[in-house]
Length: 440
Figure 1 (cartoon, rainbow, N blue to C red):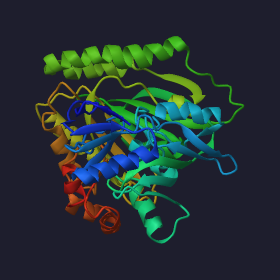
Figure 2: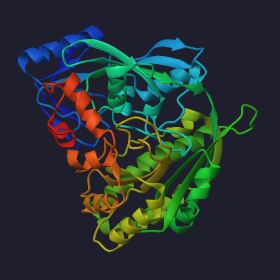
Figure 3: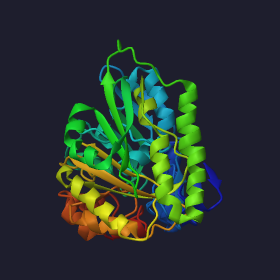
Figure 4: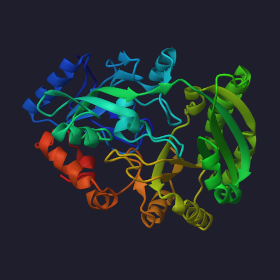
């Protein structure tokens, strides 16, 4: 087990921590040993993946575990299409490994830097009303509990183990250290991607028809304008003649325009916020129409090098137009500059207790701000708007809700607390953030 310098910052740079020690265990046994040693010292334990959460979910002054060395596919059940994966496996490593087996995850988000354990712990979801987030594909977990014991639970568990599985899948790291994840995969598939500029009102008016027609719909509205970049991805058969993007076009869009040039535009925005409306008008035009077909994960996932902070809420689909309309009105009537687009996606309902989609189809609205710029109050205003629409915040993104709010928003929240009381009565995995959102 290696130990590194006791300092940590998340990807966006808005959360820092000074743990007493940082461990990088190389086996499940070393994870259990680290948890036991922390208990002997009276320290709390948190686990960090890629640090892509914007909340202080993993911040600690105790022991911080990095599962970097617990990576890769451990077992394949070809008959059932299931794979067992080490918890620290990054999605950008996992996706091509699955593809090599002729398999894929049913759905993915647009960022693939997260570890699989971190992605499911925070409810990373993707888009598609006939599909669910990544956590819905989880069929089993192996956890190191607070007492150092190792347990495996899954979709065939009964009694207490079944409850632990439902609570710990989107578990915020509050129930134990997830060292292995079993995933229900589907045969590898390709997507036809259609991207085109559009107008905000037209997209909102036709959104229900769009999500019914296409497997995956995602649109980016550029604040201070009425312009939208609309993305529609649909699954195609093996005989579809569509081709991937030319490599030069992929480099132009994904690296030069979406990262290198976009970083420059945001730096200009940070120095001269008044030019943001004009910059957004330019950005919305530069990323123009295109069509291509490729392996699912290559379409889902994009490179995101420009750093930002983000708040995202899930709301009932019927509330989408009202939420976006109220947000637009607030932005247009306040002295705020937002160079990043507002992103809108949707998913179907699932049965994972702390999933934002628990027993509810959702539209997701995400507000971003460049990491060098003040948010100008937009995050607080956005939260006030979605509170009136039963908004459930993404667990890894900025919000100020507390346990009392979640007790109202999640039907099984009391069961989540009860399971936590049973498996971690001394709160070995607690930090200040968890104390607020799950209660002490």
